[in-house]
Amino acid sequence: MKLLGIETSCDETAVAVVEDGRRLLANVVASQVALHAEYGGVVPELASRQHVQAIIPVLERALAGASCRLEELDAVAVTYGPGLAGALLVGLNFAKALAYARGLPLVPVNHLEGHLYAAWLDNDRAPRFPALVLIVSGGHSDVVLMAGHGRYQRLGQTVDDAAGEAFDKVARLLGLGFPGGPAIDRLAAAAAPTPLRLPRARLDGPYDFSFSGLKTKVQRIVRGEEGEPPPAAAIAAAFQESVVDSLVTRAVQAARDHGAREIILAGGVAANSLLRAVLAERSPLPVIVPPPDLCTDNGAMIAACGYYRLQAGAVAALDLDVQPGLHIG
Image (cartoon, rainbow, N blue to C red):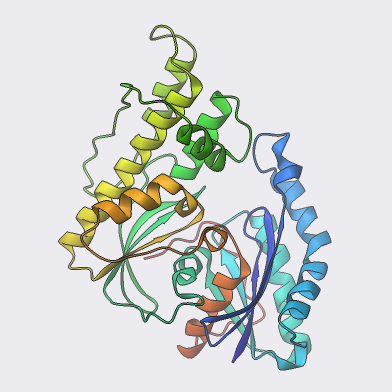
């Protein structure tokens, strides 16, 4: 069974073809990073317009890469939330038109759920439930217990900034540009050992996160409000270490408390080298992490998730609307 996956929740126009939920036949992503870099972040209106221009060429490239014709597709899976409303509408309306024209089932996919299904793409290893999922991206930082396909319980979340958002804001303070995550990762890797240690938030929820105070602390240091600022690389390393420590500590604790059999790391921030290394080192359980190119937004994860949603009968009518504030669990 071949599914087309369409993802336009933010600033990547992505289309992929996946067979039987696991075998990746083609995965094409048109990035808008250069377009938004001069603004220091994603501009929703520009993102939507760019999706309109890019989506047909991206579809054509994906079908060519998979050596697949529209007639060979069995369903169309599409992200309908969470994300930027205008950007989501481009992908959803395109998917509706395609599904209607070809007489194909339309499968709605939660963007966050899609991220975790990237863990099993081109991977023969079967999921082991219950699994503890740490979803970390520019808009979300969630700890989720996955009891089975489509069965989720959200255990914790960020109470303010998401981890990826904090990376972007701190990168801006350090003059590193956009996107901030990769820039901080590279700069931190070049840092000399430093005694600088940044705080971890103390919260009532045992699996919740908070990064707003950490961002404010970095701002005070950069502005010289706490003495002569250390080198930017030292600040980047200390900031990254604080974020990673918070994420890993809560994920590992949640996995222990809820009898998880494995930990899945997903979302754009899952590409961070320190996070991947520290979680693997500190977890008592197997850690499943997609390759970096499948951590960021892509159509393959939507098609993979869509396959399992289709098996469960989750087919949408053509009046399906976007849900920008959608959660998981």
